[in-house]
Image 1 (cartoon, rainbow, N blue to C red):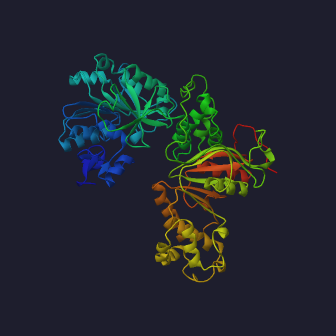
Image 2: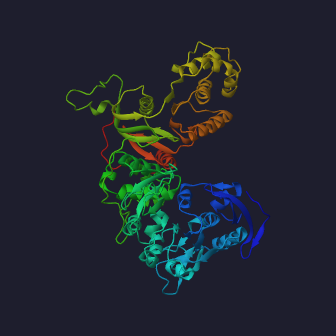
Length: 613
């Protein structure tokens, strides 16, 4: 929170000092520009803490009297807490405002912290200046073809030279987050490494920005490995977990943070869970999740890796629907990433990576399908003795391969209502299937509301009946009956038979009982549109609360306006297949354009099966 009146930073205007504790370390005062479009500054103005896995990893290697280098220091999220812990700190940033803000913060805290303005490079030869794009936390060296907006000339600095000026022959800990210039920065530390120094390094590995500088994630990680470092992914999805990686491990997100050390963290007594490399299934699942990210940059990276990565990845059955979704992406840059790199272009670098071992459904997966198929009821669901399987005409959906993770909201878009209905029933365990479909959490199915209630009983009796069917305690249901009726907007006439009320009332009752009294881990929904805006808003907020606790929602819809909760991903069922699965906005837009006759959607590159008759 802000703890001082506005001050003025010469050349920039009013600033504020805020006291923030970083990753549980003692609070320090940061200097922020409240008018800047800086997400970190915005967070500091609203919170007195920040705690990210990368910060915890770094600060575990910092102590009194140690020497620390922070490259891409920004507001000092690493530099200031390191100085508070008693370390000597060298901080470097190419953005002039960041240098000014951190310098003022160092003065405020009374730290002897050296802040240097410059672009880190291998060599300061030539003019000694570099063109730098000032863009808040995403500032980077100017690349060919980029415009001149936000470009400034900044001095080039070489870390070996700065260390010589300080008289430092060794460094204990280092952080690098310089948007693709990491390889050049490490090359500018030849004398440091030649002298035997091997600081613990926390480093961002930004695939997109590295390639703009003509190198890959493999190049960066191989350079660290050649220096004798062991590499670990700092897993932001599972705080406190480090994952062992190799130089050529497929990077599943556009930007990842790595820990590079010469002695394993468990041998140092650090309290981290260390796991072996990601399994094949986990690698694919993470790439598919990133392929549906709201951030186009993450989707672009996934498109690049899925389309041009190793054969085992391209051939995974879950990848074709993801590529179809990416081929229909609303962002042109994502669609362009599917094209083969032109002459001289730097590819993702994973073409010949060996296939990781299989590990089954990734942690946190509530539904995992591999080659599952659904057939019409009564069509002979048992596999024939010949092993040839049912004829294609009997198929409702064939060869389904997908996953649904905890906390997700997945929309099902289908031209065939029967297909989406039977898929929801299969996910609930109430409809048989062939192939593998594993459910990792308690499902609750809300379809065909007429079958879930007794129309001749009163509304109140149906509330208790449905709750009891879902495993809720009858006494508790009766005690909060009035509250549930009010929430569902069904208090009036609640003693009358349910048949006297419309389908939406029944749907509101069902949703109220499930969301207030049951504890589903996988909520499966195919209900009429909820027209009551107040009730719809409550459902959205309540589902958001339950999703934060790990519940996933899978809902069959025809239009995004029907969604009970904003979709993280969307399935598009067509031609008896999972035709596309990915970024929900892109899939809904492709469907809308096709229905308006604005052009056909791009389909997956695989044979189209015979349609079910």
